[in-house]
Amino acid sequence: MDKKISLDSSSIREGNTGSVEFQIFRLTNRVLKLTSHLKLHSKDYSSQRGLWKVLGKRKRLLGYLAENDPIWYEELIGNLGIRGSKRR
Image 1 (cartoon, rainbow, N blue to C red):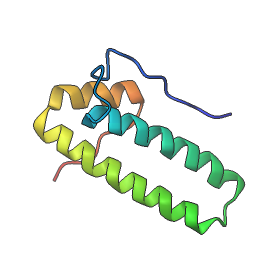
Image 2 (image 1 turned 120 degrees about the horizontal axis):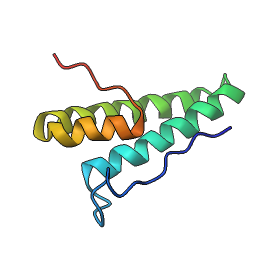
Image 3 (image 1 turned 180 degrees about the vertical axis):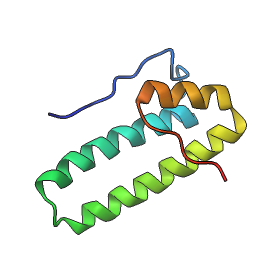
């Protein structure tokens, strides 16, 4: 029912919960949780707005990671099962 992503030590730098990788991991879990909530409560506009804000923050962090550490970026999106953001 709920698809949670487990924290894999090979994909996330250990001991640093403030790292970009860990923040993207946590935001991805929140996206999955909000998405499953919105499937049940389709008219919950407050949760929709929250989902949009989380997606925007994750998109910005993915862009930052793609520019500064492309190897970690590719590994992270592969491990989390999310597609990469389109670069302009």
